[in-house]
Image 1 (cartoon, helix red, strand yellow):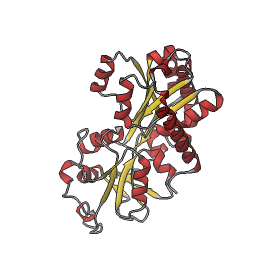
Image 2: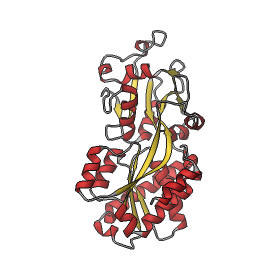
Image 3: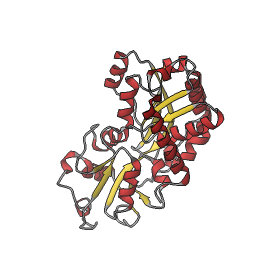
Image 4: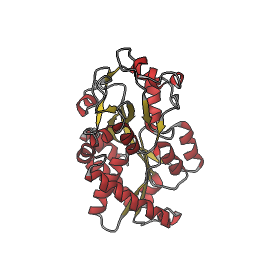
Length: 307
């Protein structure tokens, strides 16, 4: 089963959110002072955190609507810098061109680190040969020069099967794509294009779980939700676990996760401020529940004091 009941419920809620947004909740009037609507979008990696926080916050604050969309990190920043949403999740820091777009629109913001992720390479459960890969092997597999050339497992390691490799990964609007290509290939955005790409990590989960010759990558939470159907690859001999993130041994694929919040929303909408305070107050408990690694309590307290 790809989605646990907990995650299924959160995606079901996201469907309600999408319908609400289509009905016009995203109109500029939603930003008026005293509004009970908080608009969140952005990274699919950060989505489990955003959705869990929204679910719990709404349960504690009846009458408040926190809508959570999934447009990818890049897509979220486009909406954020256009003034369409209050908060956007990001699996990488904001880029200079996004900073420029926000500045041009008069959007001031605060960067809020919320968790640490172990970007996870996954294979099918029946794959017994690629359980450990080096960063050099991953680069060989994913760099642009591999397109149409590195297509079989035994090209990576002669002892591996002479079988086709079927690749699954995030689309180019994804912060996970940006981070992976930067750290593994050595240049942000540099990747072979002949793979199944999706901004929906659950499509990637399904693709790898159904194909013995598949390999993909996405955030740790999606692996932990589906570890009965997938196998995590050790990178340079180290598995992606919360312990290996904390002790710094899972490198280079450990990365910070962020929420960016508009300063004007914090000032003009009391529910946005309450939501962000709720996120930081409850992150130590909720972040590990959804599959990521929390920051220290002192770090959350320090970030909260800067809102």
